[in-house]
Length: 260
Image 1 (cartoon, rainbow, N blue to C red):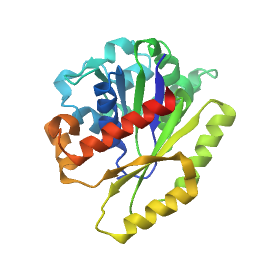
Image 2 (cartoon, rainbow, N blue to C red):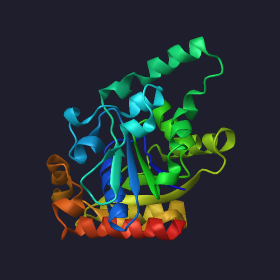
Image 3 (cartoon, helix red, strand yellow):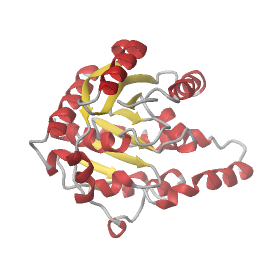
Image 4 (cartoon, helix red, strand yellow):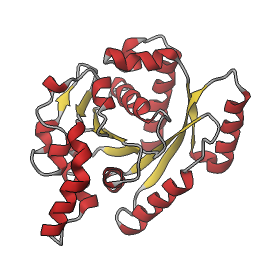
């Protein structure tokens, strides 16, 4: 049965989608059958794997609104052991859609829809990675309820821990009310510029705060990582010799080690 891991941080620009795409690809290269779910209406994880609107018949919005079986939304990518459920701008309307359903059906549980559908395919994968949007709204709550664990990307920059308390409170709320087995898989330090002192200070601060929950792997700030999505490829296929490729391979190994 698949391990379901959400990448969550309501703060934007922390490397969440970059990590979702590249961790999923790295897990695939480690021989793990992996499904990436793009749960952000911006669809950056979708385009980052080379998909465009012509490739998409059904998206994650169709799945969680019950308009399409989840199997019909899964697209097998050209990358090793990696499939994706794409996202489109349709997902931006999910709050209104769920509100209408709740007015008609008092038993409707808006935060449990994703889990309901994921549970039907969990036996088909080793890992399911969910890329969440930068908010703590309905879609992110659905991801937390559906997940076994959470990876929190934290950029190595000033104000790195801003908003983390609010995120941790949301995780505690989900643990107490809807998903008691949810845990923090780890905190991932991203966008490290080794030329600055602030990056090293943030590493020390984050490790002091989260202790052994912090991954040993640190993702560097590199131009190649920024370039890869525009070519529709994870970094491992865009530049196999890049330092970021090695970093995400190491992260995948850490995740596997923590779970197996």
